[in-house]
Length: 114
Image 1 (cartoon, rainbow, N blue to C red):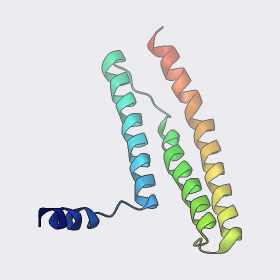
Image 2 (image 1 turned 45 degrees about the vertical axis):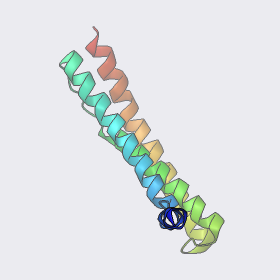
Image 3 (image 1 turned 180 degrees about the horizontal axis):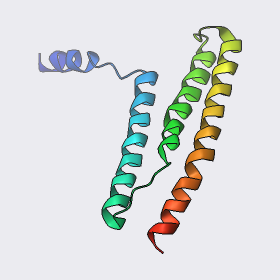
Image 4 (image 1 turned 180 degrees about the vertical axis):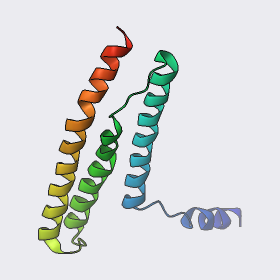
């Protein structure tokens, strides 16, 4: 009797979808970024102005991963055309975020230890 109850409890578990797991990893990236900014401020007493564009990176990576995943499963809305457009837009967002945010981080770190 105990074995059948144990089997029923295990079969009721359904793992999170790929989309939810991707969103969770994106959230972890945001938490780590915020932790870095807060730690930097605590130890140096200086803010990091101009680094906000770097917050485009996690969502752009997640967008690319989900677009390619859905295309590989055949469930992408708009088919291959929309998948290519989404990937191109996400890559543009990544480049935009890095071009605007990375120099600000380098400058903030250089000035913090002068």
